[in-house]
Amino acid sequence: MLRRTVAVLLLPALFAAIPVSFQKKLSKAERIDHVLNRLTFGVTDADRAAIAHLGVEKWIDLQLHPERMPENPALLARLAQLDSLPMSSDQIAEKYPPANVIRQLVRSGRIDQVKDPVMRARLERYEERLKKNGKVESAPFLLTPEETKTLRQGTLEERKAFLAKQDPAMRDAILARLPGGRQDVMNGSDLGLRREMIAAQQPNQVVYHDLTDAKMMRAVQSTHQLEEILADFWFNHFNVFYDKGINRMLTSSYEREAIRPHVLGNFKDLLLATSQHPSMLFYLDNWTSMSEEAAERGRGKKKAQGLNENYARELLELHTMGVDKGYTQKDVTEVARCFTGWSITAPRVGGSFTFHQRMHDGGEKLVLGHRIPAGGGKEDGLKVIDILMEHPSTARFIATKLAQRFVADEPPPALVDRMAKSFTRTKGEIRPMLQAMFSSPEFWSEGAYKAKMKMPFEMVASALRATNAQVDSTVVLTQHLASLGQPLYKKVEPTGYYNSAEEWTNSAALLGRMNFAMALTSNKVPGVRVVIAPSEARAKGLALGGPEFQRH
Image (cartoon, rainbow, N blue to C red; front, side, top):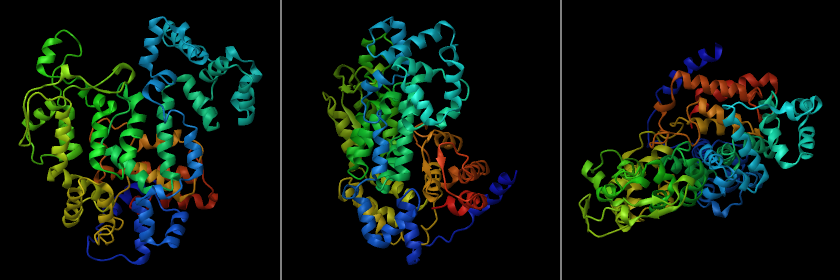
């Protein structure tokens, strides 16, 4: 009851009037706080020491050029254990298949042809569940009472020693059917054993675990903080939904190949990479989009659906020009025609990009006043991307979104203008836009200081950094983020998560943040450990859940 009361009382504090002055400069101390709050996922003592040593300008320059800094070796060691991160969709389908792929394998009757004994055992267990309407016996039938006790109550070393004695298939079966207390065993295990347990029950959940674990640990531990913020920003800008069908096999490569390599590069490269990645093609249904002529030829076939405008609309509205910024419904249709035939090979197992000429609308198109001649192919879509890159609305929209993330929810128009000019002058280079913003008087002004509300992911990551938390498991952290309204990689709508205060500021949201902060400082978040004296835990929790910490 007290936490609810505190959260309600804090609501007006978050909306309290802040002097909006983009002319008044920050003090030296405020400058350091400001840059660390905006260019990292939360201030740490190490960050303060680095700025004190380098100076603000050199520190920013290093963040803009992360290749000049060594990455945190502890983070690299953690990421190396997440073996699904570098996998192709084919490899994920083979080692960590989602339920639909497992069903296909079982119903094909070819289980005995699977060479990997562990995977074969998993398929046999799935077949058993199908025969018993989803019911399956738990592990006790495999274990003696003493062995069951070891798994339930033993130390991590005792559990691992027992499991090490089992052959791979038996080990997998035991982990899949653990006796009661599974969550306790999960929380008390190391990363490798925890991933094994997940794989034994739901193989594809390992992929989601690895994605979320990597995202959280990069935010908490990376020395390349700005790069990680931009990876989060651009994934959100070009959002795809993990739980839509084959995206369970494609999201890893989407982030790895389409987003991360380009976060400080050229916006056109981002646009091209996302437009041709099978994850985006599947998410916004462009892989089925075809000319009316092609649909007529394929009448009676399930995939012969005709023109699909989903990707074309979001390309204009969310990825480039912005809502109602100089295009019409006719332009949306013409853009959709240009992208017909942009599809996916072997879509059931998350194949690669392909272009199908027979699906393409080869007629003449008129996009934003530009004539695209008849008889084209894949290059029709490439021409649309060129048109959008040169359109002034794209420059202004991207400048505005970056300024909203790093300066204020309503950024100064003069700053947006300068950033848009940089976009146009450099033909979409992102780093110069950021340099212009970070060197601007508006960025270093009172109007920008503490003017942003942290999104849930930012709040959780900053709380972990502020407490120097030891994070052994991110499973429960991911659950907390879902309850706070930001399940990672699972925003259904293509808008991504909104970056403005009004989206996240309400009494229920603040109560959730307060509850998380109190649980964290009281060491009640399984898998996470902080070193705080019990007598100080309550005060620290109230501070982390309070209005000052929610702003950055």
